[in-house]
Amino acid sequence: MAVEIERKFLVASEDWRQDTETSVHMIQGYLAETDTCSIRVRVAGDRAWLNFKGLTVGARRTEFDYPVPLADARQMLELYCGDRFIEKIRHYARVEQDVWEIDEFAGANAGLVVAEIELASEDQEISTPDWLGEEVTSDPRYYNIRLVEEPYSEWTDA
Image 1 (tube, helix red, strand yellow):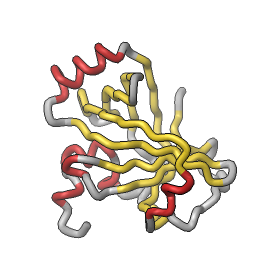
Image 2 (cartoon, one colour):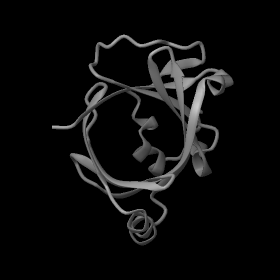
Image 3 (cartoon, one colour):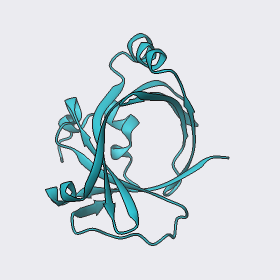
Image 4 (cartoon, helix red, strand yellow):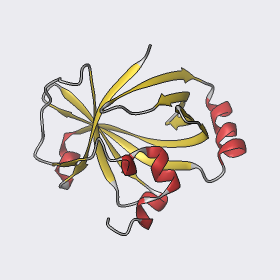
């Protein structure tokens, strides 16, 4: 079974930009959400996937990714997702041996910047760069599917 282990943090400064090696524009639309998983289509640059994500338990959840033709993914976004999508630029920043994914959100989530790191195990040691802020791994408001339902611009405590 495919398992994703990921920790998520807010960023405390713009200093992450100096560590960025590459960036890609992403759109991910949500096709369905059940009691046990979300199903989304993701376009990242010139590549696309269907993705199934299970419920988060701590920093762990099941995840299955399947490549799909880019034209098909774009049609799925248009035909099936409506306004249930998020747009962001994902930046990849190397800090020592770790590669951080920094998501800079657009649209109704503009202003939100979140850093994530995928881990091999929940107790894996990570390099913690100075630009990391508060850890939000366990805060469901920062799940991408929740940002579709309740965008960052609508938060009263942001």
